[in-house]
Amino acid sequence: MNEADLSELLSTLSSLPDELQRVRAAAPALAPQLDGVDALLERSLVQTRAALVQEGTSPALAYDLMADLHKSSRLADNPFGDRAHFIIGNRRSGTTLLAYLVNASETICSLPENMLCGELAKCDSLLRLGSMVLPHLGMPQSGLYPRLGRMIDELHYEYAQRFGRQRWIAKELFSSSRLDVIDAMFDFRGKFLFLHRHGLDVALSCFQRFVRRDGLPGNPRSGLYLMQYLDEWVATNEAALDFAERAGDRCLQLGYDELSRTPEVVGARVFEFLGEPWSEQVLPRMAQQRIRPFMGDNLTAQRGLAIDAGARVPSWHAWPPELLRSLGRRANPMLERLGYAPL
Image (tube, rainbow, N blue to C red; front, side, top):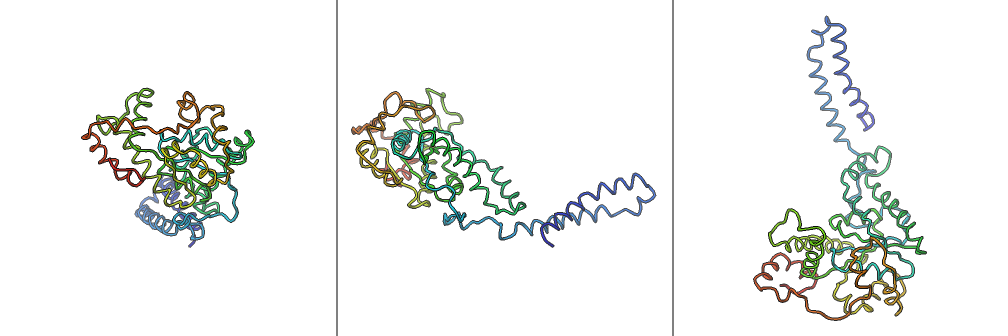
């Protein structure tokens, strides 16, 4: 019996208990003859539900796990071209500067922070429902991903065209654990820039920025609130770095310190990775851009867009050694994975 027949049988059996109740009410004399029928119906319902679950989605439409594992495209054509690009990493890691650097290219438009991709990727109820419903429409369970990607690409592409650009780049800083879903939305064809910064620089910058704006963090793990932001840095970079390794040559890893010290060198790498021509005019063009709303840290607007190439000694170098050892127990594994010295 196929899935459609099982579904029809289940619907019929589910309606029979109500019919029996109406028969008992209309003809009480028949009630003794109906004893035991309810139990029989219940057993039949259980068996039919079990058969339907066992039947499941046909193999041709079942979720294609191998595409996820190998990051291989599911679509025969490429509806996204080479338009989709993303900046990933932790907040306070220089991602706004990187976005403006890319925006100084000839064809790529840096989008205002909208978090649309990430929020859809985190919408488990939508993804679960799609995987259940699509097979009934004759579509594969994983077919929801590229459809969401097409919708997002259409919105982002329309925005880029207003600025005369043909491609776009979006910051996704709050969905590191769902980057594989975002990747699947664009059929594993997008490119990613993973920008990282030292964990203590990030934690201190977050504390100085966000406590003044938002107050102390809620539900802290420790009364030393700095640790809240350090824990966030560890979790975000762990997920982003794991993804970067899985994405292979579609993800370029960058260090904020390197970007600050040698912007010409790093900028040229970024542009080559994105397929954009690099020239000595890119950095001046970047510094002359008009600040746009919702691009990220508004301190960038106050300080200007020119990248600070000067060397500096982080203030946390002067912190008590006992504190640094304590913070190191949390941060050192991630610091070393990213190429920093342990604390």
